[in-house]
Amino acid sequence: MHALERRSPTAALALQDGTVFLGQGLGAPGIHVGELVFNTAITGYQEILTDPSYAGQIVTFTFPHVGNVGANLEDFEAATPAARGMVVRATVTEPSNWRASQPLARWLEAHGIAAICGVDTRRITRILREKGAQNAALAFDPQGAIDIEALKARAAAHPSMVGVDLVPGVSCTQRYDWHEGPWLHGEGYPRAGDSGPHIVALDYGIKRNILRSLAATGCRVTVVPATATAEEVLALQPDGVFLSNGPGDPAATGAYAVPQIRKLVDSGLPLFGICLGHQMLGLALGATTEKMPFGHHGANHPVKDLTTGKVEITSQNHGFAVSEADLPEGLEVTHRSLFDGTIQGIRLKDRPVFSVQYHPEASPGPADSHYLFERFMNLVGKAKA
Image 1: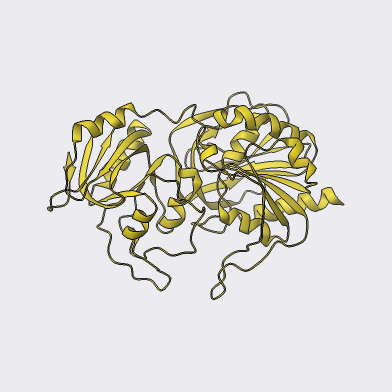
Image 2 (image 1 turned 180 degrees about the horizontal axis):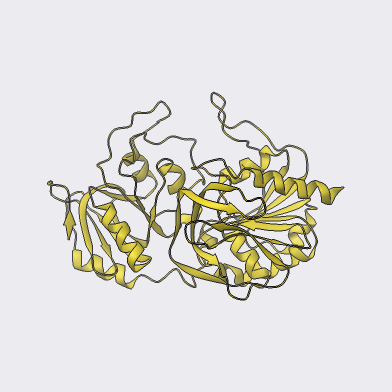
């Protein structure tokens, strides 16, 4: 066991290897179980915790001071946060930011997320880097009544992410139109996307800032559920199709999504995928995917665009990747991670189809990759012409 707080612990984090960390709890009391990952972003914890790609996961922040800007009503990437827990080094203080509407602890509790602070997040990160992704159980009891052995058993018994389809829990259930542009100081999110080329976005757990970024290019956006068929998408007469980010194993979601994506590729329409959408596009084109040791999670990952030679700093959140093995003919690798060389982007040589593993809409993160939305719209414009 490891504890950095002198106060009696009110929270515990048990890893599936039996390691236990004791600290102070906040947020929603109870036991919360999921895959433990670490995120290297310095800012944007509210966007991270509301990113649907974190469904079924507990997030350890490597940056020690999290929560000091509080929470607000604008920095949501989904209506309902999907993350199950948060792990931080320093005790969360009262907010000190002009945009804060409530303290982080109250926001976590309102959304059913538990957190533990005062633990050695460097040690947790080293464990995940050396042993790979681990399941964990996070318990918070204001009275400190925690059964450590039962907590370890919960962590050890939790199923792996491999083979798990988490998309049904984060996708929309019916079609809707999107009319919100990027945030502006003093204006919030202005209305946008009322005209222009029509883009249909398949929602596998889409982030709101992706939709805002699409609307900012001047297109009209319609969002459809992950279970929408290619025929239903094409009946909307789109000028382009977008495949969104999302959680879980792409091969599991791909059981029903990949055949539809293959039909959309065959339609000849411009197609752009991000994150899970990128992985399932790879599957549709004949590639395979694989679970990464500990994934990529953060807002400071360098990626090289092989088509231009430029290096961009990117925001990432994924535990699976397109495999190098048996890449099909006609598929070109366009981007690579400068951390580990993994595939970060692909495109078809003979069709207007491409995707990236990372998040060009950022939120949080740098804006280096916003050009990809313009690249997509250029393809849409050429196809319409």
